[in-house]
Structures are given as structure tokens and as C-alpha cells.
Image (cartoon, rainbow, N blue to C red; front, side, top):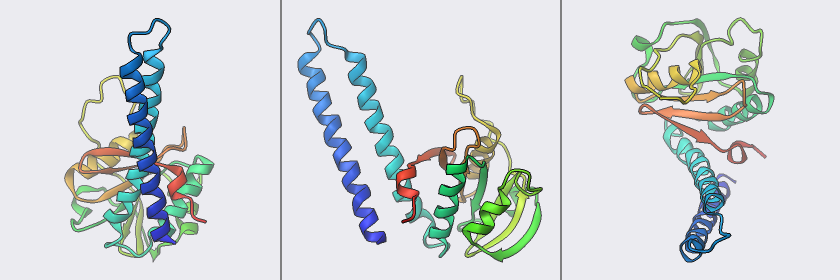
Length: 206
């Protein structure tokens, strides 16, 4: 099933690339016409690029963590359910680098990683829902960890504390940090100081 999902993602990316090529050709041939809306075409092309980025992000997300945990499906399921409910979350997937020296330790959990446990920790009102969850291999090590905030200047773009914390830790280590926005439910991950959106269509577990 995972192989079929990867094929679907690649086919979706290929489809949107074809749409971009077609619309770029339309722009090129119609740009001199009086009633032609160039801004409309640019907006449509931008939407296609956003879809490609979101789909590709989940494809690479799996490849980035699958060698470090066997709980990819549990993590993806939790991420999608939290997104659906707009419950904010911040999860660290530790990879080769230890993150301990860069975080302010929270509450020890030391439990098997499961979607139900992740979702319960980030349920609004839970004392542990603020801060980040730390996952090493197949275990949830701790919750309510405090991460270093990035010093990047994002100009006029509004970047919340969770996202700044995720980017900040990803600047110090090779960890992959997952985020769900409690305002929009949008999912993303931080890696190497960069934030990437994740498509909800790809994280949904059948």
C-alpha cells in the first residue's frame, strides 16, 4: 500500500507539472491580448506549485524518518487527526544528532509511540500540550520540551512560536520537527532551518 501511495504522489506531481507547462504556454501566446488576465494565470500556476511542494514534502518526509523509526504510520495518523481537529502540536523526530543539549527538558514519558498517545498529549488543556514531544526510534521519550527559537527574519510573514521553535532546533541538529498549527490546522515540518508544508491528502491513512 505504501508503494502505491508513493506512485500516487509522483503521478500527482507529474500532473501538476504538466498543468504548469500548459498554462505557461497559454500565458506566452496570450500575453498581448487585451482581455487576457495575466494575474489570474500566475495565481493558478502558483497554486500548482504549492500543491507540488506539499505533495513532495510528505514523500520526502517519509524518506527522512523511515530509517530512524518504525512508527511512521502512527506519527502520520496522529498528525492528520490533530490537523483535522486543529489541535496544535510540535514533535521532534530525533535522527543521527542528539537533541538533548539544545532543548530544555520537559516531562519524561518513556512509552511506546502510538497515535492515541500523541493525540492525548496534545489535547487542549492537557498539562503537557505546550512544548514539544521528543520521539527517539519507536518511543516517546518526553513531552513539554522547550526548543530554541530561530533568529531568522521572516519580514512581514507571521510565524508562530511553534514554527519558530521547530526551525530553531532544525538549525542546530539534523532532527526533523513536525508542526500542526492550532489556528489553521496546517501541517508542516522543519529540516535544516527550512519549513516545508505537508499535504493533508498524503498523510491521511486509509
